[in-house]
Amino acid sequence: MALLHAALTRRSGASSAAFLVLLGGLGGLSLGVAAALPGRWLGLGIAAVLQIVLFVPLRSRLSRPVPGRTLVSSAGQAALWFGALGAGTQAPAAASPLAAAIAVAAVWTWWQIRDRDRTQPALAVLLASRAALALAWSILLLAGRGGSLLAATTGLTWAASFAVLALQLAPLPAAAGRITTPAAAPAWRDYLALTKPVIVVLLLVTTLAGMVVGAGRWPGTEVVLWTMLGGALSAGGASALNQYIDRDLDGRMQRTQRRPFPSGRIGEAQGLSFAIVLCLAGFYTLAMAVNVLSALLSLAGMIYYVVLYSLVLKQSTPQNIVVGGGAGAIPPLVGWAAATGSLSMAAFFLFAVIFFWTPPHFWALALLRRKDYARAGVPMLPVVESERSTAWQILLYSVQLVALTLLLPLAGVGGAGFALAAAAFGIGFIAFAWRLWRHGGNRLAYGLYRYSSMYLALIFAAMVVDTLGRA
Image (cartoon, rainbow, N blue to C red; front, side):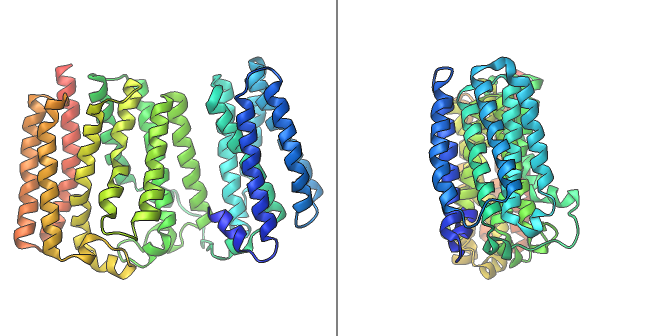
């Protein structure tokens, strides 16, 4: 969307750039549809005809002649994509050498990114995305995972290739002009900070609980490791995308102004490329090593967090964290699907626990930082309501949360041991919320914020211990 917006806002050559991006999308769609068609040559034939039809308006709408090197490179990549598509879907025996060729193309694409983040940042982001997609494509071929997943990856890679060609031929200075360049190469700690590692660890605890409770036992070390890796990559990529979206807002808040984007330690093209690659890696790790349902749920969580919460809700309504909290509640569903291959009603009770936990946890933090949020123009509940009104809402949600955890054994989640643990931890939660409502103050708000973080981890750990103890 950002690339398309930049293309549309460019005064000269805007229609050409936007048209090329549209052609990329149509080209990718045509390849994806064609790859799913039966028959040895039918799919390839239709794809070839569609690409030739698209190439005619492509040549006529270019803002300037195609450089020879660019044309040769693009033609070579097009031949590689067509060859791999045909061999991967119709001649599996040729998958290995073609997968190696695509991997080499991915490495070459990564090599092209050098210095692009400074001179052509939009192009650098697309190059990184195309490289990650090409690598996933080669792994799919080697693993023999054809069908819809290979077709979708093929289409996305082709669309990215068209978009790369568009930006090579019609660069977008409007997109480059607003992107800052860091003074030095970012350290690995800066990239790690983009992923919000503390939040990732907490989400992985809930993912593991979903796996164990769903399976009713230890689901197997291999599936646990792959699921945790895919979940960590997905959550880290979504967090990095969130920081990219909020980079201007973070710069206006004291709590977040030292983050990598607003501080300038990571350039926007570098950080956005990193985020997209992590998201793609997380999705394909789950899809190839676990199952497609867990990968789709993870993708839904990323879209929920990045689009619905970060882009739509956060700066538009005081109920942002109530509705947006559903994004953080999806990891248990991912774990459940990874262990069982399906979802049941009990899985959504785990979703509900996090959904009701999120408002009191985050509003406690918002009470501490309400001046920050007010300065940044974010309508968090403590900004638009009084401190006492916010504390009352925290207390109500806390009571609902604890009541829900005590009812979980009736839904088949946990036994007597878990019920005792939920009661003990819940009494502490309600006690913190009650004191905050009665007395107020930053000290009690901070205490509730810290306790709520431990509470979530302890509740889900209790589920794991109880389930394994009864297995």
